[in-house]
Amino acid sequence: MPDNFEIFFSKSLYEKVFEEIIPNAKKFLWIATANLKNLHINRGRKFRPFLELIHEKITEHVNVRILHSSKPSKSFREELKLFNDDIDYGLELFCCPRNHMKIVLADNEIMYLGSGNITGAGLGLKSDTKRNFEVGLITEDPKIIKQVAEYFDEIWMGKFCSKCKRKDICPAPIIE
Image (cartoon, rainbow, N blue to C red; front, side):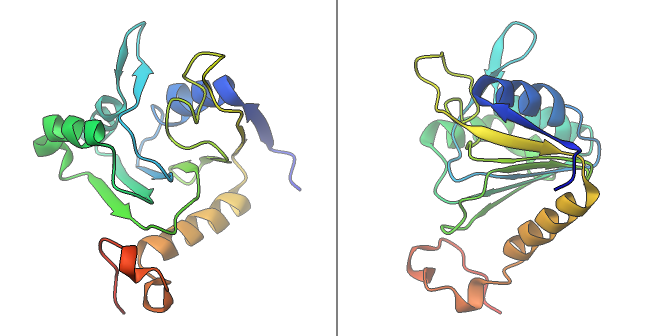
């Protein structure tokens, strides 16, 4: 196992992912999560919608892909409407009911891979008594990042859709 990775737990995951990795993305940001909720994150001593940060990245011409497994929460969809005109050109959402990965990949240079969904409880934003117990690996290892990025892209491009046995619950299967 390469030695250029760090292990993070609960709240430190939030700090690394939402205060470093996502804000520092320059070209693209790929996110995989099972649950897609209207998360509010700490931005300059104020809590603001996660989508505000995504909006900033898009206005900086960062392409954002979010792979999720179920319909986004109602509050996420309502928040998305506020940014819809500006976000449309740079945000891609893809729902695959089989996705259970939790990944944040920025610019093929740094990646979070772990157990926490991109939610407050999942990445440690909730209070000590409400957050989940999560663990995640942060790496800059190009070999590991390449392997995960290729797998993410295969799912995104529908490589597994034609043989998937879950088409009955898939909102938009890609048929090859």
